[in-house]
Image (cartoon, rainbow, N blue to C red; front, side):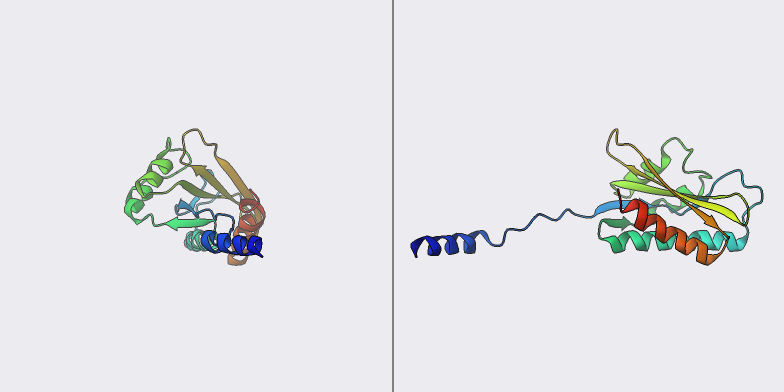
Length: 162
């Protein structure tokens, strides 16, 4: 009986033992851009679709519980001046550091035609020497539905699998 009482007392002092939960990673998600080299310039509908897709991507990341999306408003004007966040010599990482992120996501849509597109998302931790990761999903059809399905697939089947 004393042994059981001793264990109960110890358990009451220590509390429940559960694995420590990692804090969600703070990430900056910049507005998606169109990759250069498209045979036709993006339409207003294309631009609206790109904004909607980036917003959906942020929402999906937050819902996973693995990420906290930090606001990028403080660098929005600077980001808007950069035509290609992938080819600016690390400016996306610099912008991410300015807003307190631990990593950045940069999205680019490659429009081959109105039938063939792909969404590319690049993830870069801001730790020294950490490698960048790339994720991609092909789309068939330049519609809200194809973009919505594509970004959901990318998050569920690629980003969450890492």
